[in-house]
Image (cartoon, rainbow, N blue to C red; front, side, top):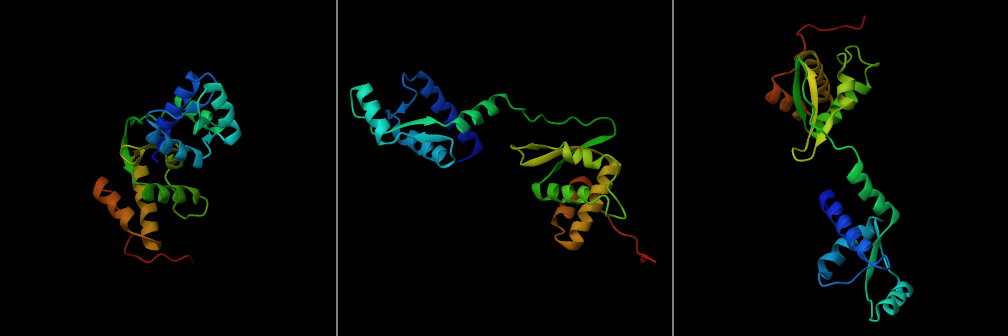
Length: 194
């Protein structure tokens, strides 16, 4: 179940639950889709199904047999409330001298590792890159992380992606090079630690 469909199922169940006199949503004409959605919510701990005893009480209340009833759990209501009132990601706007950069998840993972190693690296990340990585916003529609980087930060990120390419996979660095034109190429001379 996608996040959007979880939210839709929570909202639908909550709306019907609030309209109910007894706080339970009973089986209705749309029972198949409702049951499937609630089953997924129940597996996630966001909804609960009435047990036999509660169904017997609801049957007495309704004056008819109640075979199925559900309601949101506390965490289910909290998820719904947080979704309604939580911070909505906003698309960052690049400032002067910055470029909006869209990173795939694998590239963002590399960026996080790179900035976390700042104290251990001989060539640390550019000033401000760590802050931009922390402030990155995930755009679900694009499936990309959005950052506003300066030219120096993009060059530094290209270096971090090159480090990853040497030790793991070059795909992330190659993609960054194709999309933004920044590729790190080490000097031809040998560097010695002595």
